Image (cartoon, rainbow, N blue to C red; front, side, top):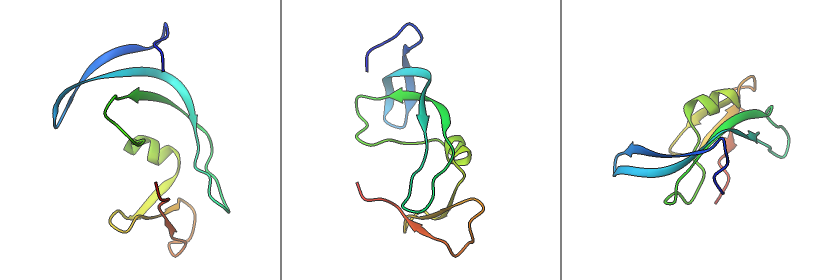
Length: 93
């Protein structure tokens, strides 16, 4: 991704020390799509790291997408409003 007039380069503190990232405000529409349901679209910011090899989402985005995590270890989740027994497995990489 190239820098735009609205984007900026930042240095953020991480557990591994300072990391240079690129910040793109309100640039992406995100939604979760499964075989039988989907969330609404959410407009979100992006932070792009040269070290990340998969997307990470914040707790606020999880809430906006109406995701309820039932088991982090087993990767089970559901959409808010679905019955507690409606468990969805995490997708494979």
